Structure formats: structure tokens, C-alpha cells
Length: 550
Image (cartoon, rainbow, N blue to C red):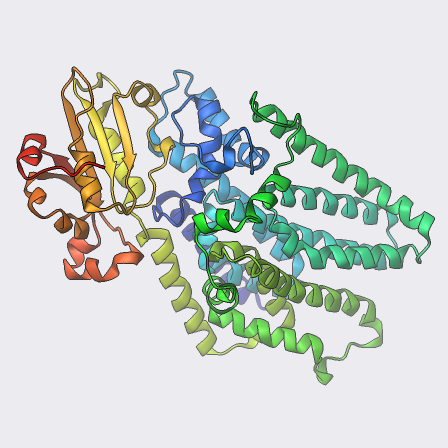
């Protein structure tokens, strides 16, 4: 590779890194409520003393999530903020950016893993292919547990590869070190998400085959080899159990110790629990979600690479001197292929299927196609299709999708809270309608919410009658009450005569609700891609018609 090409590839990669940073800091698209409620909401309350919203996973009587992954990924940044702001006043924007910067930093572990999972001559291409995936600009820079799972899957593959290389180098010490690291990653993955087991299964099988091969099937030698990794796994698991048992303190808890992966598994085995989160056809992952996550261009070359694994090309038969190196490559290619099939197939058993469940497959698929080599010779069709797919999906999920919710929280917070003079003389009732759930940590004025000076109500997709009823409530208070409605412009017309009682205080753009694209188009692109903040004229609302009781 010439120096000019090498510099060009380096410039492209650095440009993609800069783009990832911009999406992390400025991308306000709201992909799924879990990006907040499975992480930052669980740590900000204890560390910063903020009013947060606790979801079902964090019920101290029956917790289904380990507190350790959130504590490491957002708890540490929040702890730093507590030191930097000893008075406890941290702006909502600072909290938002601190979460994103934490996961932006962690995302480079995927770059590190992919760099070492591919041929040395193809590393620049692998970094560019991974770095240009919209997954890296959206999901991986957000506090999803799936993002942590992706990193752990990639690291497990990296440690497996190093084990295989160390085997040929006759390095016993490194063999044990990488096996212990693999055990550490495996336990972390299970406690982060139990779905990690579906992706890790092929790695575990290959590690088991490796351990039997290196000990020549001698039971005593095999037991000695597994002693160190088994100890690491046990100590790591005990650390998780201890941390969770200390964190989830409740007199009503039936057990002294908490094993959160088991709790989550039991929860997911009950069909009525899954029904609350949505049931999907079992083919959804394979037919819809996998092409959406990987994009069709990468998926096509993945199929091609898997075909080559089972039907090697005759012109690429390894030379005698390269057989050992080729053995590692062939083993890793088959493992990468099986990771994709194992993850997709096993997760398809569960009828609750979301695209983000499959994002751990992106890095293995990139390594698979780059090591195969065909994608390096791909023509313009692949390049154009890849760029178009990832630009569209990055803009959709990174900017447009529910993109007004987070900025609206910042805007409303600034309306009702003054850092200098304090809260205004009136109480506030803020009602969100036809949006994703507003997260609590974007309201770093905990005393106001706890004292009911500010109430935040999430009506989701509630009926018009319930919305009018909520807006017309008169809570007992001696102070004047100001009511704000935050809703997409296309939904305001549904309130009919009550629309005259709404005064626009602001709008946030862009905001796209994929469930109501038709309605958004119907009111025009300006209003259709905007989230409105409206002040409710309560006397006018009282005179506009009867309020229907719940």
C-alpha cells in the first residue's frame, strides 16, 4: 500500500471519528426509552441526588438488572460531575453530554477489537467499514446495555483469536491469561444482558475445543488449565452478586443475595410479561431486524463470506509455510459466522424482538467480510449502497426519530427554572403527549419535583379525553398553576375546540414520529417535523366543553 493511499485512508477514518463525536454530542434523536432508563436513570438518583424515574428492572424486591454496568459506564462520569459541581447544581445539558461522552469513549474499544481481528494489511479498511456504519454513530454512543454487550462480544472474539495465536507460538502463560480474560468478559456479559450467552456460545465452544486440544484430552491437565479462568469467573460473579445485593436493599426481599440474570430470565419466561413489552413474529429478527442493523450491502457480503468458509476457493489454498497462520484465520472465520447465526437464531426464540438486540453482530460481520477479502474488491455498487443506507439510517435514528423530546426537556427546564432567582412564583404541570417517555435526569431540579412544585406527566398515546382531563385537573395548591403541553403539532388538531386554548411557547425541530408519518405529512413539513410546547389557558379550557372524567 502506497503512502498516499495510507494517508487517504487515515484521513477518512479520522473524519468518521469526528462525525461520531458530533453525533454523540449533538445527535438528539431518541431511539428507545431504554437508552436512559436502563442506565443513567438508575445511577443519577443516588450519585447526584436527582429525581429519577425507576422502571420495573430496578424494583428492589425483584431486580432484573445488575447495577454494576450502569455504575461503571454512567455512574463514574456522574461521580466526576459531583466533584466538579459540589453545590449539586448540574445543568441538564451537562448530564446529557456526560452520558454520551462516556459511551463515545467506550465505542473505541470496538475499533480496537476490529483492528486486531483482521489481517494487518486490511486494518484501515476494516476501521473505515466499521466507523461508517450508522450503528457506531447512533446506538454505540448512547447508554444502551446493548452497546456494552457489543463491546463485550467483540472483546471475547479478540481474546479467542489471541488464544489461538498463542497456541501456535507455544506460549502457555499467555494462553492462561487470555482464557482468564475470556472468563471475565463472559461473566460481565451475562450480568449486563442475558442475551450475551447467545452471541458467546460459539466462542465458548471453540474455547472448549482449544482447551481439550492443548491438554491432549488429559482430564487432570485440563482441570489444572481451567482452574485460573474458573476462579476468575467465580470471583467476578461474586462481585456482581455482592454489589447487587448491597444496592437493592429491601425488607420485602425474599432472599439475602440477588442473582439478577436469573431474575430476568424468569421474568422473560412468562408470556404475559413479554406481552407488556410487545410480541413480534419469530421471523422478525431474520427477515427485518438483521437487514436493518447490518444493512443489505454488509449482509450480502456476509453470506458470501460464509459460503467461502464452507467452499474455500482453490486459488487461495494456503502454502505449506502458512498452514498454521491459515488455521487461525479459518477457525476465526467459522467462529465469526457462527456468532451471527447463533445470535440471530437463539434470540428469535423469544417473541419480543427489537433491532437493537442484534447490534452486537455488526463488528463480527465486519471482521468476517474483511478477512474474506471480497468486500475489499467490491465495486461502486457496494460503496454507493453502503453509504446511502448508513447516511439515511444515521440521520433517521441519530437526529430525526423522536428528536424533539430531549431538547424540549432542556427548553421547558429553562422556562420554569432560573438558576439565579430560583423557581417562579407559580407551580408547573408539564404534560407530554404522543412522545417517548421524558427521562427524569433532564430535570436536574430535584427539589422542585419532589415538592410537587413541578409535576411531569407522560401520557404516551393516551386518548383525547384523557388528555383534556389531565390538562383540566386542578390540584390543591395555593400558588398559581401554569400548565404546559408538549406534543407534536400534528396531534394538536385532535383536541378540536380546545386548540384555541393553547398558546405556542416554542417549538423544537426536527422531530419525527415513525408511527404517525401520514399525519405529519398532512400538516406540512414545517409543523409535521416539529414538537410544540404549548401553554394551556385553563379558564378557556374550562369553558371549551365538559372534561370527561377517567
